[in-house]
Length: 139
Image (tube, rainbow, N blue to C red; front, side):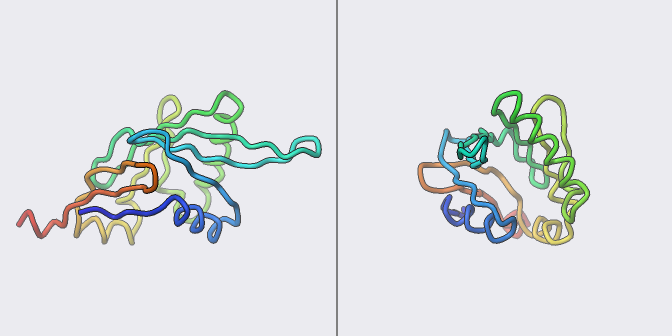
């Protein structure tokens, strides 16, 4: 089974939760580009971050990111700050520019993962696609 979310739906959710507009564009079957506008010396410029889904193992998702040395520093700082917020226990920085999302550590996600097996997260020109199988099919 698949759940499809448009990039606009994801951007709207991020804006609602974080108060930031982050345009998302397709980069490849497992990669997207996330943009962020910053003001530098009275001029707005867009900074991009490439995010790749490396591995999906039901309750754990391994992501990698790339955006250059300055971006990597900012991402690490943001992730370290996020660890002290609700949901921060799900995020683990691992070697290189990689992030482990341990969904099983979240009560709500853990309850969902008892019912489904997460198989893949991929992208196309218009959608982020989450592939899963209900565990009832395995019984």
